[in-house]
Image (cartoon, rainbow, N blue to C red; front, side, top):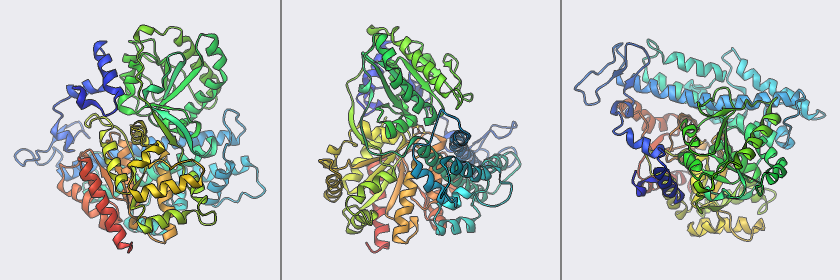
Length: 633
Ligand code: MSK
């Protein structure tokens, strides 16, 4: 791929060039090798649900208009979308379930993990209707686990407790009326797979309603559940100062990269890297340097201040630096190609989960019982690997940026409380009402090889903040914005005057000696629930529905099915959700119309597809202005 098409992150072309010189093929080359991509697949018109197929529908009306079984374009597209959203939801629910199992073990006395945030424990317990007075932490945890496990064992039609406990009344009533209230999350995922098998649902509207239901499964049994339980176990993030980009790797340190999603592993690697620092020194290193990729990087950044190495699309290039002694992965977004690339260097790639094994990687089984021994083993493997590093192959780019992160809802409220201790949300609401803050946009999601790396995230956000839109962010979008310096308080100068005034007022009240950054890092992909919590808190304060707020969401460069399920949850919450990459639905005019137009009347939110960042920013700003006008602002 030509250098100017690769990335706006300047570390990327440098390392891509190194990879080329060393004969290493990366995601950028594999993307080019896939061109042209199949038009049927791109438009969602290919069905492989039974073995009579694959069937393809001719979008131009000249070839077949139905599959062998008679399925129309509308049915094929809607079924494919439901399966993708169900898969995304499954990934997040499985993630949350892993954390739930560990929480249960803590209640049973397991010692590898503990309760770091007792306040959050009580707060979540109260939300679930569990009394906490005169109870030990273990007793509260036990009761909480019982209530949550009930959702997963529930065989009735009763809606999910966790969703009911955490949703606004107005949304609950609407979801019930539409018949999209999920029951047992596992059952919903199972039923979605059943519903989309050959000879099942042939009604695109019914399939889309089920898709909304699966979005809600993700939002509450995936995102919200995972974030809450992780905060209880590992602590609720508070502001931290750190750095982002591959320049955080250090030549004379043992460099370990944590990659994946669930902090059960990465938190332990952080703990043991600190404890085994002396062993690294004895091996000739100055110490151990940890850095993160993808969302587990966000998890340890938010809670431990661990720097970010890079995001999804540049994960291979981290190894191409020749300076990574070991990369340890858990689940999701891990390119299988990493093993082949690691084999070109001294880098050890370590998988840890029974459902993620990569030929060529070493496997160290990790679970709550082995957490400490496995983490020690992995850190020692990295120290041994450091001694085999070939200095001639090392090139660490200098790019890195200052990052102020750690903005959980609790941290935001705490910062606002410095302006108004009695009513912390008031300063935020007042500034939205006055127009200092025009509205809020959440940018989330991945990189996608179809888009110049990080470009959409950065251009879109610069446009938004220039127009006084406060940006909150998670996932690999947060990485892109961090690397671009937009989480450095100095970037407040890029914000419009109104927004800059607010950021400065909050920063000054919190003795930061300057403004808050114009982009607030709220965490990993599952931490989109933090954004949901903030939206609900503001809506409740104003006594309106989330759909009435001057807000929008955007996944500018998404690639994962998880992003589709998160987006569907956001739409079900009533939020206009921008996609910067065209989803595979254009083969069905009906499905496209429902998702991008009719949904708004039905549920308040809709998808908005725009592949130009400047037009997308303008579209979201227009939407925000319309919402403001409807609120008489
Ligand atoms: S890691 S899901 S590439 S945001 Fe959450 Fe990044 Fe997307 Fe994976």
